[in-house]
Length: 230
Image (spheres, rainbow, N blue to C red):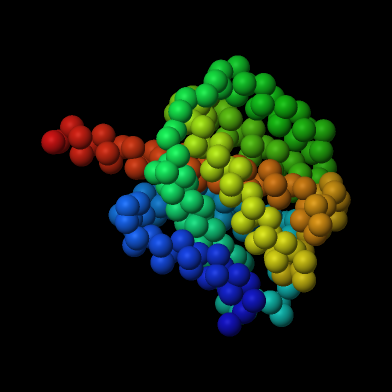
């Protein structure tokens, strides 16, 4: 079994096993996770395919199985299943045990943040990964301005983003230290936290935020439908 596959399986193993433990019983929400994987995950896999083809990053053959799909190692595809599953499991645990409350996040903050990320993308336009990840963050705040802005007013959303940075850091370090995933120095700023490119912290934010957005969309819509029927 490849090292990258081990990292995926270890990352998801405890959340998967505890998915069957009450009171949260996260397994009941698997269909909403699947919806997020098919929508948000589909977008990020498409980005990954394009970025890999463009040469922004690549994969050391000695650490992957050699099975590819869409030009990506199968382990990379599984990354967009295992890691979000573990993170959304974490969100539901937080949401169950920590009472959520509304925090100030005016719509103008969306506009300002989207503008800042767009400006950064324009400044670093020649660096492909830097530009792409800044645009992804810009897009998230623009989409949230139009749809489900109230999710950004949730304390537990920001706790979810903050708490998941710890496992993100561990997994990303394991991927970039050998390295299993290497980066084209022409595509990034060159600033690293240990072995992790700074851009990856913004990638993690936009990815997990979009997964959360999609997950909440499917979950809340299902609950509203069930409530209207009853």
